[in-house]
Amino acid sequence: MNDETFNLSIRRFLKMVGVKSQHEIEQAVSRALREGKLTGAESMPVHMTLRMPDLDLEIPFTGHIDLE
Image (cartoon, rainbow, N blue to C red):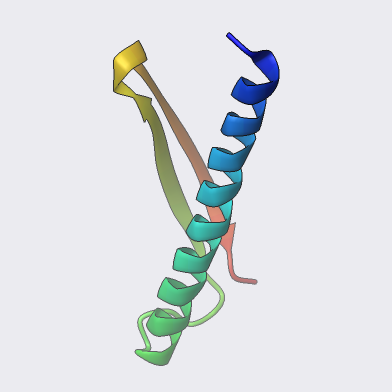
C-alpha cells in the first residue's frame, strides 16, 4: 500500500463530501426559509453515516446546525 496515495485519496473524498454536503444543506435551508417552513432561529439535528461495506465499517455522526 502506498500511504501517500491512500491519504490523498481519503482527503479528496472528505473534501468532496464536505463541500457537497454544505451546498445541499444551504440549499435546503434557503428553500425552507422561502417556503416558511423555518423561521431562521432553529437549531436542527443532523445525522450522517459513513459506510464502507467492503470493510464492514459503519460510523454514525450526529450534531446540530444552528441558524442563529
